[in-house]
Image 1 (cartoon, rainbow, N blue to C red):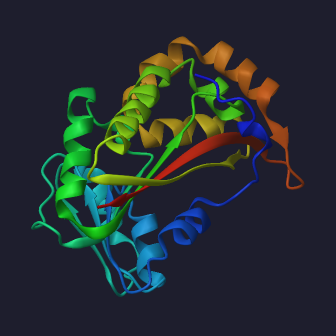
Image 2 (cartoon, helix red, strand yellow; image 1 turned 60 degrees about the vertical axis):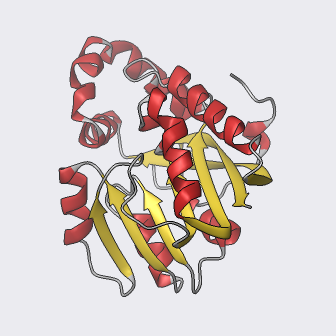
Image 3 (cartoon, rainbow, N blue to C red; image 1 turned 135 degrees about the horizontal axis):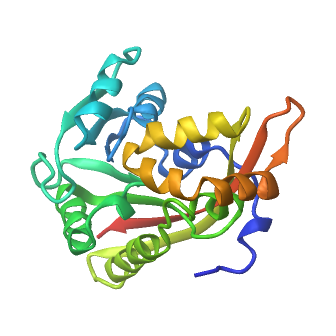
Length: 236
């Protein structure tokens, strides 16, 4: 699903958009599917009491080994069973994670977010769109067109419920840089080793797309822009 003019939106850092939209200082925040905990540490550095929830033991281990930031913590768990009491949190974040949840559990995950949020609490969902240079390269070994669309439909269904007030839908661009194709391959397989077979099978077209869609930056790195969508909902 293409969204028209998303490639004309400003270049932003994920962390800057998150902080701008959620204003985390003094808030209790949860990052669902936190990966290595990078955004949890950003939130904590901004003055939040931030917890990252992660199902992957390997990712959770990385988060816990990272340099400690006061106010940051990590838990093992699933999005559809959040280990928090009702009305406990000010912000729940799904950053690039909702589309990784099984489709039949996406609605459950958002319902859990509603349960643990205080009245007036914020739900922040940031998802990459199935378009742009970064997507064009990745789609040959990991085409997420359908799951990304399913995640957005789940957000739209939630926004239509009376328990939510939709505050904003916004778009921005981010970019990733790689020294060369080998560095790109290493990073893609580090993120998800399950991609290895598909990457090997389609390496020729992936390399061609890498050279076609990448743009050299002043440091000689190949950069790939990715449009992002942010949906911000307030718990009623």
